[in-house]
Image 1 (cartoon, helix red, strand yellow):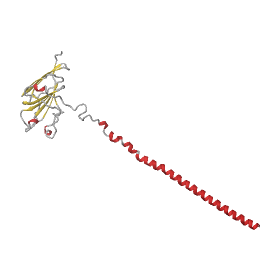
Image 2: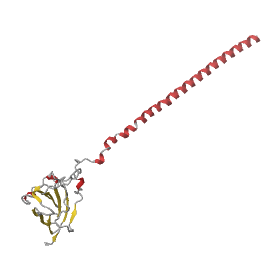
Image 3: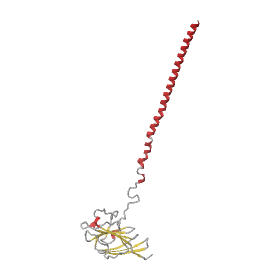
Image 4: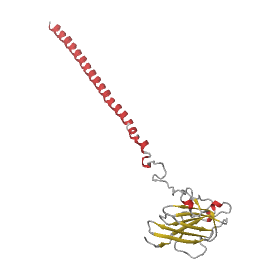
Length: 239
């Protein structure tokens, strides 16, 4: 077993309010994965974290001295397999932000701003506070860490993204699936009309043919009658 000690990455953001204690907080995340039993000592002016990672085979340890005091009893924590998240209640309610997280102004390599949770001081009132989204019930810090065992995990959206298993790739296909049949309806009616028309034209031709034949027959009869008359006249003249 490795006995190495590692300083974890720490990210932070904050909100401030002179009237609403729930909005007068520090958001602090310690990136220490797979810590089975984190040891947290939270005091009004400091936080000490120690935890052994089963997968990284190292012990994470960090000590923080805050810029100002926090209210330990009103602070909360949430432990996941990836990190430990804290909501630290500022003891003094003020509209102004803390100028920094730590008491000393010198820069430390492991501390970074959590831009996913950060909101500028002059924009915090109008911005939705999404820092607590999905945190579920958070354990209190008043009695140390015992409340952490009963806390739920980071309830995420689930594999279906929280949309109840709806397959969006199929949306629109149901309504459109029957549409191609509609496209052929007018064409079928036109074909029926076109099929009937040649028959009408054919019937007209037959009638014309019959009329022509009838007229020919009439002309033949008339010619025969004239011939008979002429023959009779000639016979009478001869006689």
